[in-house]
Figure 1 (cartoon, helix red, strand yellow):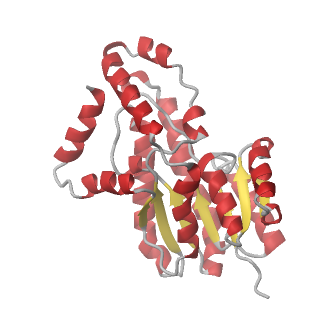
Figure 2 (tube, rainbow, N blue to C red):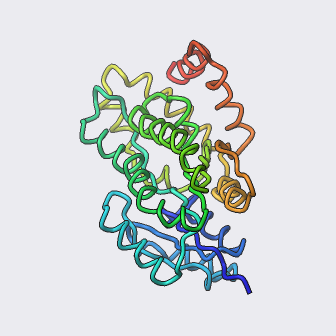
Figure 3 (cartoon, rainbow, N blue to C red):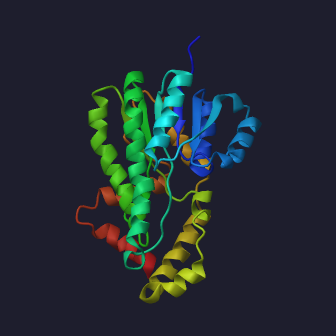
Length: 281
């Protein structure tokens, strides 16, 4: 009897990560569901029990901004299961604001979680993935292709992830490791709620940017009213885990495909600028 393959997923306490952990377990993967605070595992464990996959989900602590935490988690996975066949980089954090009113520490924090955390986790996992002829799947965003108002730091980090993975993919392929990026659009999850934004306070503090910010918030609230569910956004991750030859770039919805296509066909940048300028008027 063939032993199940092992996948490690970061950021599984809620949203896409939680849905991906459940989906991977349902697909037969031994799923290492990691999170920075394992005290937040209750929702995942409850859902795993309800769907009959609790025996395939193993919650472990992993903080993507802490190299020692990453190494300890991977050492434990290899000691217990002997292999790692896939890594899903999902952990991330939003950061809303424009640079004149954000601190450099705010920008550095966004880069640490959303970019350097992905780089560090991928780097540590690659020797094991190479041994297993496995794959790296990274959740980026349509914001990793199209820069979006009041998301300068977040989009910068996601752009960096896309560039890193696009550059890594052909090199990793030479040693048998596939690389894929998953690009969701709006997803109805705690990712947005966890921002804890005080909108009136933000608008009060925005000064000359207040009208643009108000327009952006109104547009964003509308777009999240028609958002995908986390399970819908996670489905392409599960497909990429099992595909014989996964695509490098995968959008999670027709809307996301159309949105990304605007940028990929926009040689002089005018189409994207026309699109996003309308969000802040």
